[in-house]
Length: 321
Image: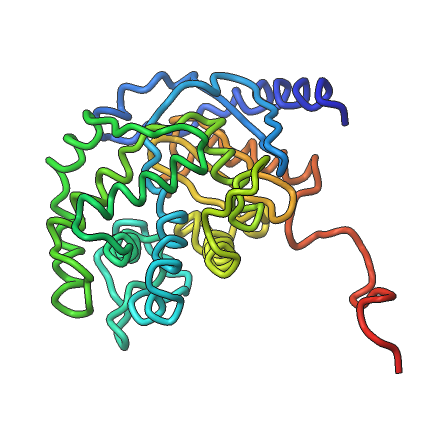
């Protein structure tokens, strides 16, 4: 498919999904007033080439899509064993903001629910809470290709209503090992989620994950191979919350959604995808975004469990007897 043909395909894809009018925006005022007809899709290849359609330059808070990247940064900060001591990697079947810990270990089930995401944020190394947030911002900015700014309106609205996240943070502190003071962790996490991105920038972030932690089109490694592999694994099994099983079956791409209406997906070794539409389903995932990913997965053969057929062991890979 040529670049022109792929762009035309993406434009046609948006028209296909535009008729999906189920869902409402998130109740947070900064999202509740979103234009429900905004729609965008972007693909970024491993060499940094981007194909886009729709309002891909419109910016919105990254929200929970930041969780995947920060989990990777936590792994590179303190090591995989230490992260696993604090956060499990099992699908929970819970809503993203449920106040719960594992009955046996008192660990959050995974880093994609808020309990795990708050813990991962606290594990990122930094002299203090402000330095920790700046390290997170620097990483996401390098992946996006632009210095990201905080949407202050979003930050203020979420902090004013952060009672549940504060409750989760205090629970983790009381029963497990939250790495910092609950208020500082929630404040930094809220700033992290309020970083504003465009759909094209989201696709660049996803493409970095697809490219083994190297920013596409560059030699800049921002996450280790180990961290990137674990991020992709958890995205595939837990990234779409309590609809993760349906996602793996129908789409099969490591992905993460956000309540602002974005979804990012990383196809290992191939590239990154992002969509935007503020209409959300009951799980907090974009209805049009899900439909777009279903088409993309089927039409471009992107399901990671349906790779091209080839021998398990190829000539030249191992010595014969």
